[in-house]
Figure 1 (cartoon, rainbow, N blue to C red):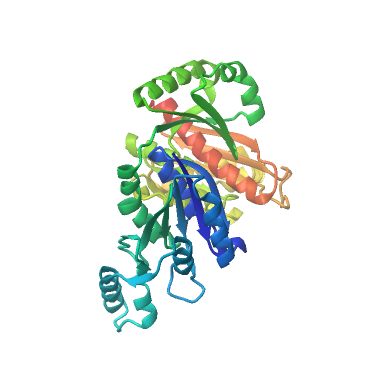
Figure 2: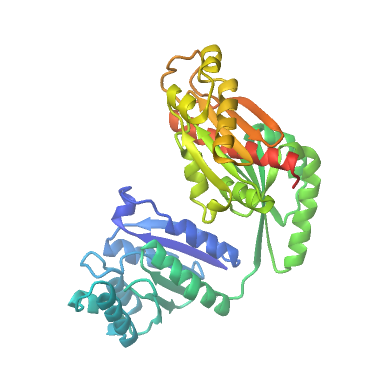
Length: 418
């Protein structure tokens, strides 16, 4: 089964907003065995919308569309839907009652004509209730293709996907299983990794596809299998992972199913009942931001200090001035004292200390731009490593943040076990 995803809106095309809807919908479809054939972001032009609908007609089984369902004059999707499906708009009384209740409850005023127009839907449509907004979802079929229209507001679209669209797809379409298993590796570049596992990759069964997913400081290897027999697919993937372990087991930090490093690290901390604190310098709070973006992070993340200056390192993390004088602020010794300072200040099991030159200048140290020292204070002691993260500044910060969490995972595996 194949799907296409369309996002409508000039605001996407001019870079005013980032299209997060497509990524969410693609992941949701993949989870239920629907392969995404193509994605497209298109303008608010009526001709463009009609042409795009026609392009995917009978090419894919289902088209998911977001955007253009609002009450203002630039929201023209419903008008184009009626033209394309040879239909007319009618008032849906259930939607009108819902819109009225939302407006009166949250805005404390009577509804306007624009609000009433939100209850206009194509007469041939299956209307999908939008619990979180005024624009309903619309499900329509033309020949061999189903079109699903949803508002572009992310939390409204997600609500419709979870409560209406995904269950309806599962009920109406027969789908294969699509399974993924992703191995997290660190410390080896993509090209060297490919050379290391070349023979293994060449002998992969036809049912498995391998993808390399490089990111700052790491490479994810994703094995994907598609078929009707879920148990057989799981067995084949597990067999191939077992063959891979002897080749690169020393650089595998764990497995993920579409999860970020902050999610996997957080899960590991939570599962082991461990806590973490941070002493950040060149990363400027990026690690803390990553960790706290995960719901429930307060269970394991105690807090952090962004000690950007020498004085902050001394006053807030207890770094010894003599250590700085002897080694400069960009050094293993200072990173280690920062990690231990964070660990002690917050009473955590683990402490991370990061200091380096993110660039573009090197300040008062002889270390080159891109040099970062990351230290990890553990219940058993403190360890540190020196890294050359390259340039530019944003890349150094992101790589250092990811590497710090990878070091944390590795150390927990070593000290506590998987």
